[in-house]
Amino acid sequence: MGKVWILDTETKGTGANMVPLDKVLRKPSAAPERLYVPGEPQPRPAEEQEPAAPHRFKVVDVMSRESLVEDASARATVDALEGVRSIVDVNLYVWEPARDDWRQLTLDEKRLLWSFRDQ
Image 1 (spheres, rainbow, N blue to C red):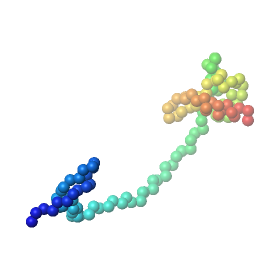
Image 2 (tube, one colour; image 1 turned 90 degrees about the horizontal axis):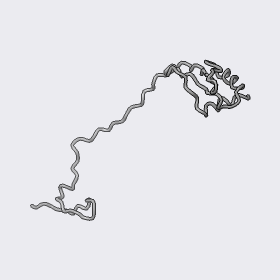
Image 3 (tube, rainbow, N blue to C red; image 1 turned 120 degrees about the horizontal axis):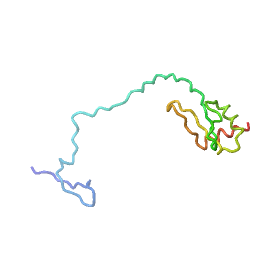
Image 4 (cartoon, one colour; image 1 turned 60 degrees about the vertical axis):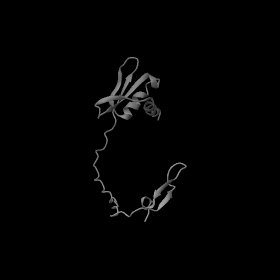
């Protein structure tokens, strides 16, 4: 007996091909694929974090490069800013323990501290 041929229209484009019927028929797989379902995530143990140390600030006069206050609390820094004429007359630094160095505050951070001057 001869092969049975069919017109396979699942090709891309405008054409179709004549293929043997047994190529188009899908044969059942021997074993079904196993489905993987992940289990419930295990809760992480809570890390005990030390409370953050309070920020320490340094205020330096721009003109004289003199330190107005150094290693001061936020309240002492705001008190030191009360005697300053303009926000651009001083540079403000905050102590970064991770870097073990002083980091200069951005203008937005300086404005935030400056806003507490008159309160």
